[in-house]
Every structure is written in structure tokens, then in C-alpha cells.
Length: 342
Length: 270
Image 1 (tube, one colour):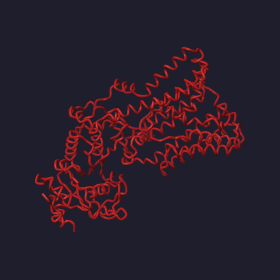
Image 2 (cartoon, chains in turn brown, orange):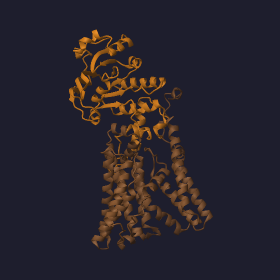
Image 3 (cartoon, chains in turn brown, orange):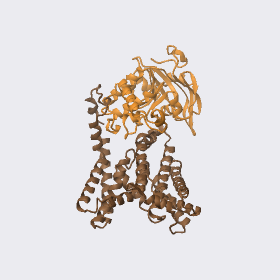
Image 4 (cartoon, chains in turn red, green):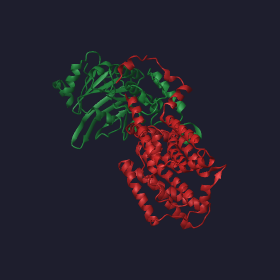
């Protein structure tokens, strides 16, 4: 309690009434975690471009973006869920499950045109939504912790995927989908364009709408949200549904890119997404975070890993480095919070 | 001055804005409230005091729509009402300021003022859920100015404000929305001496805007400093009602709360 602090405050001091100056906003932005992470990203990109002529090439940049796109879609949903104070460990398995549903649906239809892909997309979205609603139901209605719920559905969704496929990947992906996934517009792959569109929508929706505002409030103080008449349970349902839906979208992108259901390929996705979200400055306890931060958080590991490969360093170093960086980022967030609370 | 509880028309004839009659609340076998009467008038601060377990919190929770009474009736502006949720109470113009600051620390003062009641932009953008941050900010600044609450910054999260300022935001929010009654549950419990003084000053200014304030407090000095009327609860009943006209002492209140004045209180227990 800082009594003197209040004592020296003149009663008529109304600086807050003045419009925020650009300088003030800029200073606030420069004090944020995403800004520091952006500096780190810029330094990394600068460093790799300087030491290797193969880094800043169209081909390589395109690769980095393509590699990051699926994770970016998942990380958007994770950002929403984590700002609300939750977790979603199931997204990797839900991605696989949705991919299997889509592939099986398209295989069953047997044609190879836009309609087939549309049906596949629908199947993927329904699969993702169903898991999201299931997670949301267990967390908001049955009050099972998010960690346990999504850990459970992570196992179940993958198990069901194995049962549906008999344990081997479905490789009958229609050419139409592969063409969409490998195509590009002025040398920018469609996959990247789709990811950018989703990212921008995610950004605008989070920062400018009531849904986004409620997400922050629920994460910041669920009890206050309840008292203010916000239906916290319903909001959580929607957030996990969103996370599941985005896993369905990511499933289609992955299916198109790799032309297979990649049953074994997504075990690390949830942890990679959480890493990206945390690196981007979203608080582990909820209440604060940004999509732009998550974008930076997705690219730091991606650039690091790509740069190491190009320099001939074992890419496993990326895992080592990022592991420590994440711990440091969370530590910095905690210090910032305790200083504010004091 | 102690008032006669038998006749309800003693208060210069003006009807209470909020009135509760014979409120009973059971929790299983526990009778938390055994037929409490309560009233609050516009432009007055009514303090509700009582020892732990006297039923203050239960009564406030019933009056603000959190609990449903087992029996008894509530009137707002003379009309009988029944609340099944806090939202019902909000709709009647009743707001509550909680002891443990119902604010979102990570959000700006304006976002907190409009928490759960965000203003949307007009037209299509509004239908899509887009927020009208400019209007919300302007209305918040106006509300703070009206109540002479000064905040360092309207942009930063309120976690950077002092405890007293955060409480001011919570109180201003309830005022912005309250049309008839504001319940304040121990609003100064977490505050230091100077912050308490400023909060009490704020409560007086709010009283002067014409709403009824129901102040729940353990602090007899605070109560005697700001309250116009003091209602004393004990063991689930209203035991006394004092008009705070300078003749009431802390000893009177404590006596009524603890039952030391029981012989006098007998007549109200019936």
C-alpha cells in the first residue's frame, strides 16, 4: 500500500483526460515484450543474412514462411485461449484427426475437383469444431482443468486417428488441393496468403471487438467478468471451439502441403504454439497478449532453426536455445507483473 | 437518535427507493436471515453494520441478486421485484462495489468502466462486434471528472494505479450504471488511511448525486463519519436503526451489534 503516493497527488490532476500523445503510445509499445522480441528477431535475421548468402534468398524466405504457416494458424487460436487464462494441448492431435477426416471424406467421394476439396474442408472443420466444443464443455461445464482436459483429448484424438486409418497415413489427397497448396500469387505461396489473412482477421477480432475484449477480461479476472454479467463459461466454450476450428484449417493446409495425413508429424505442435505465444509476450496467467507478438514468437524459432541449417550447425541447437529463451521470457514477464503489483 | 421500527413512515414521508420486508434465508439447517427488514433512501448513505455472522453479506447478496431469499419481499421504487441473477438487479439500477475489487487489472480504466457493457460502433461494424473505444473513453473521462477522480493515465492497465485509485475506478463504474442503489461491501477494507479518507469523500459526492448508498462496514468510525442512517443487524435480524445526527456514539453501535443493549432491543426482536 503506498499511502504517500496518493497524498502527494493533487486532486485536480487530470492528465488522463488529455488525448494520448503519439509519443506516449510509442513509449508504451517500446516497453512491451513483443518489441524486445522483434529486436531479437531483427538481429537474428540481420546476423544470418550477414554470415550466409543463402539466407536472404527468395527461395529460403519462402521456405521459412511456408514452414511457419501451419504453426501460425494454430498459434492464433492458442493466443486467444491463453489470453483467457487457458491452454490447449490438443491442437496437434486435433489437426491430425481433422486431416484424417478430410482425407477419408475426399477418398470416399472419389472425385478430384473444387467440390471434393470443399467437402474435405467441411469435414476438417467439423472435426476440429467437435473437439473444440468437447474441450470447452469439459473445461467450462465440468470444471476439469484445461491442462488435463486437453491432455486427455490430445491422446484420444490421436488414438481415434490411428483407428480410422488403421495406423498408416492416408495418401490419397486430391490433386486439386495439392495444386492450391503449392500454387502461388506473384511468387507468394497461397498457403502464406491464407495464413496472413487468418492472422490479420485474428488480430482485428482480438483487439477491436467485444469478443476480443471479453477474452482479455475473462483471463484477467473471471470473477469480475461474471459479476459484470459476462457469461464466462460460454466464452470459454467459444474460445476452445475457435482453437479446434483453426486446427481444422491448419489440417487442410498441412494435407495440401505434404499430400499425406502426417499421423506422426504433429506431436510437438501444441508445445511449439505455446512457445510462440509465450515468446510473443502473452502472459501465462492470462489477461494480456497480442497476435503480433505471437507472429514474432512463431518466427524466432523458425528463423533460428533455418539459419542454423544454412550455416551447417545442427538444427537441434535451435531447440536448446529456444528452451532457455522461453524460460527467460516468462521470468521477465513475472518480474514485470510483480513490479506493477507493488 | 434511535428510531421507532414499528412505523415505516417516520422518514419525512418519502418512500424508500429500496425496501426489503421479512427476508428469510436458510442454508440447509442454518437460518442466516430470520425475517430482516431493510430500507434505503435516495440521496442517503445507509450503513449496514453487524458482527460477523449477523447476516450482512447474505442480505446484500440477496438485495443484489446473487442469492434468492427463502421468503420475503423486495421493493424497488415501491414495486415488488424478484431477482434471479445480478443482471436482474442491474436492470433495476442496483449496482454493487465488492470488497475484493472487481476490476480487470490488465485492462485500461475505460475498459473496466464498460466491462460487460461495452459500447459498439454504429452500423455494420457494430453488428460485427467492433467496439466504440472513443466514446467509451470519453464517457469514462466524463464520469471520472464528475466525481473528481484523478487518474494518471487513461491508457495503461489499471494494475499500474494505486489501490485507492483502482477502488475509485470500481466505485465510479458502479455509479455510472447505478440508477437507484449502490451497495458497497467494505469499500475501504483494503485501503490506507489517506486513501480511505478520499474514498469516503467520493462516497459522499456520490450520495449528493441522488442515488441511495448502502455501505457495509466494520469500521464504526467510517460509518459515523459518512452514514446518514445506520441499520444494525444481529443474528439475522434488524436490531436497531439509528439516524446519524451526532447523538449516536460508537458505544451505541457496538452495544447494539453485540447485544449489550438487549433489553432495549427486545421490542424489535418480536
